[in-house]
Length: 214
Image 1 (cartoon, helix red, strand yellow):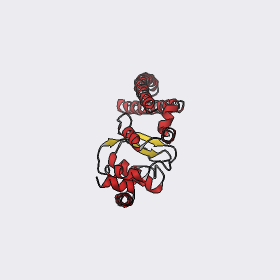
Image 2 (cartoon, rainbow, N blue to C red):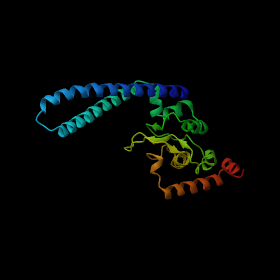
Image 3 (tube, one colour):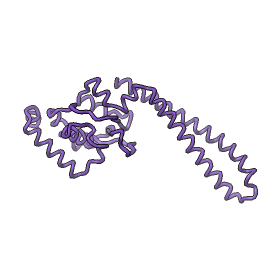
Image 4 (cartoon, rainbow, N blue to C red):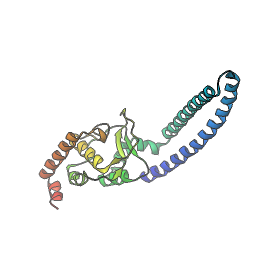
């Protein structure tokens, strides 16, 4: 399923690239048409004012076309179950019983900046995962940013493995992942508290203690 999603991402990228070319043609043709109309309506105005009007209308035209392309893009996504399983990644976790290792490998891929969750997942991680996550809380490696899709915050950039590991630890602590909207919402004090909690839990857990002593 992950392989299928990656292939779909490539297809989506080609669609957006083609849409950009269409945008350029529409903007050019539409701009020329509007130019002829405005010439007839603004003969009494100076060239400076005229050029300003043209610029504003072309910007408006571009925004309209971009909005249209985004709408079409979202429509295509809504018709594709594979991509929906990405923006609702809890489906993949539940259907494939995805391990932490597999999830970490997935977010490390550089094919897309984010991974969305339509609803929270409970009981996915275990205390035995704590040592592995604690070993990653200082890593600056670039990974996909996980986020809750009910977030009002627009997520466009990738995250770091350190942020996402603390995010996972917090999810384990509250038995809900994602635990909050995004990893970037975790303040420094809360981050320290989560790591301290994880170390304390690992020291009391048989499998966690064995891993830490290695």
